[in-house]
Length: 352
Image (cartoon, rainbow, N blue to C red; front, side, top):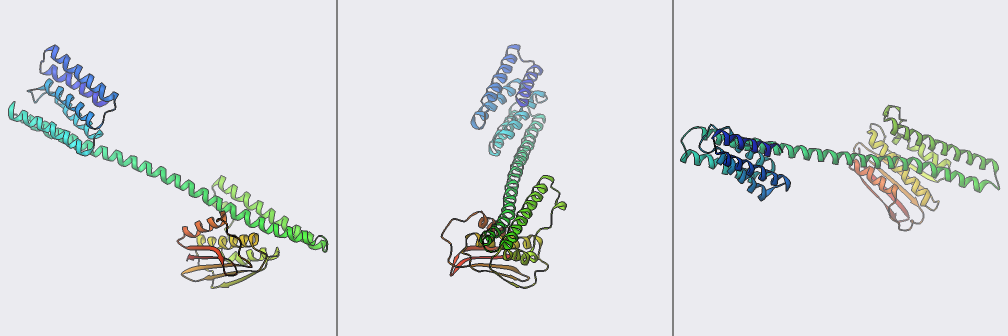
């Protein structure tokens, strides 16, 4: 609304300053009002706006004709700025060229006064300034859009991270608990002490799982990373294996290399890969032996988990395999999981 209002006022001021007949001055003002109203009503762009601006420029020129000292000529600058803000750069330059040509014609035909040259430069500078403003505005809009996209992507990544952590925490504990419960069921008839021990272990595993979930939920609520419990690492894998063995799983662990100096994020990923692989092997395997090999060097961490026995039937990748792929891909590593000769094989390579 600012540009149309300014053009109407400047047209009226130009007509008054040049002492136009009242009827002519009124007609020029009405033309400016109607043209501006139409442009605003249809939210004009492109050709309609070019035509409307041409009509407004004609009105300003008729109101101020012959006098380069007339303040109404500022209307031409407003028209140039309007074109630069709304039209494409090519059309804005075309409008600016037309307005500049009008002043050159007046310099050649009406009077050789230097004021026409001043208005020529004024229109050109206004057009250039508003083209710059438009581009800066478009840049700000693109930045805001990019920020919104990044924020949404960050929220999505965080949801995926939370889902992976909750899946790993609950899946491991429930699997160990089920192993203990299965052992207790089998021992009920023959060895009550063993059954009680297995039930106690299942209870402890469930309690630990509940504490882990509470800690994770509390961390998400408070956002205080310092209050979080230490994250597991490669050095904790033997304890992880022991928890499965204690529940009755037959697992062979082969550690090669010294797991020292590994970044926390990579060490946690290696631990989670082994954890999820064991969970899947216990849940979907046939109870046969499970072989875990961890080969650590300065360049990479290689994890191999092989589940003995017949390979499981073909099924789509579940949440666990998807989570493992996401974890490894985030660190630039590779992971494969699928049937192999004699069982199910998970292989992962994580750059150190």
